[in-house]
Image 1 (spheres, helix red, strand yellow):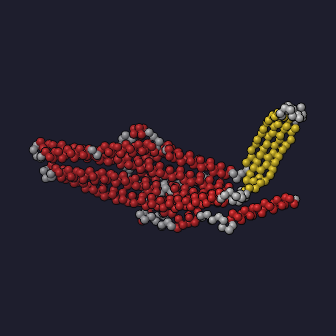
Image 2 (tube, one colour):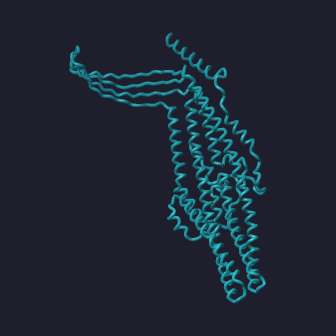
Length: 489
């Protein structure tokens, strides 16, 4: 009993000395506190966005909010767009990569959690041995066999493995946030590409109408020249204007082809297949989504990249805590139980149960500063994770402000170009009447037609920009995934 007591006392003294050395006297600096980073970030958020309309400062809609954000593309009222989004969510390769990495992260979390449990293994052996010749018992053959059940367990006294397990779980949650982020980006990109395609089709339709008008004008100019009512210069100017307008079509056709090809990549479809599906022109949706009416603080929960950066910061903090425990003792319990047999030639077989049970302790004494360097590296990664989180939040604020600026500018431009298109249409009608009556020269008519082309194309571009701007707004707010779904642990 005295020997056992001395051994226990020795272990206790060894543990206390190592803890004092590792944690006392300022040997290891205190790691950055994630809670302080989160509190400072929340305190620094403004009450509302600078460019957010006053009407958007309405109370949040509670449980309806996630559904509104998740289904925002349906506000355009376009079934083909809804079908494209569904196809993209089922076949996009970026999303498939993100989901595979999520599965990998969850497997890593399960592996890290397994360290906290005992390991149990079974092993067996069977052997035959023969001794060398010219020995005291020459040509002796020995058969042996056995089977053992072995168990070992590390007692997580100071919580190092628990911190590593929690860090791996947080990595999995960050991977889940990345899936949500890819989903958000994918929905926004598909929507924007579809709307840009529809806008290009409407620009082509406007261009074709203007080509037809100018072709008619060129025909009239040629008729007037033959009748001696105008000079040849008028015909040449009409032909040049028509040729210039027709030259605007190939770049738009090229842009349309690129937009179709982009939709093919996003939906996992070859360009040839999608080109057949979208051979006919599209029209821009008349409806637009409503303002989501969120505050800057909502970005902390809504933005997938901010959520992911938060999880990574918490994971880095747990790894920094785990690194500090490497300076402390590690305690192990192991044991085995089995049965072995031994048969020597011409002798009876011996069979006997065997067992082993024991405990051990491991304490680092000298490793040339390796563990402390690992702690310093973990602290540096923690500082970097904090900076990444703060940057992600600032980036989110910037994205929303830019999106609001885009929505406002596109909405104003849409109204102004609509007014200009109406005015130019009326002006052209008056110019054509005046030209037919000989009161307006052909140069004036060409100028009026050119102004109408610019105004109509600008009106289409403004409507397209307004529709696309809302995709940027909802992407900036983190729309496109269901925040009500619990994070996978």
